[in-house]
Length: 66
Ligand SMILES: [Zn+2]
Image (cartoon, rainbow, N blue to C red):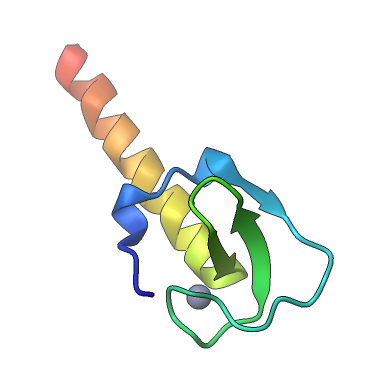
């Protein structure tokens, strides 16, 4: 499974404490966050990317409203 990080909502993810193997997105990093709703597990690097992309979108939207 290779979901596009841009379509995932980082707020749906919660930290996992068990070993779930490698992330679904990059299949490289150890799983640190999981979304039960999307059934996607991601590593810390992909989560950071997700948050960054989300913030970028929100920032542009806010900017457009001014
Ligand atoms: Zn990853």
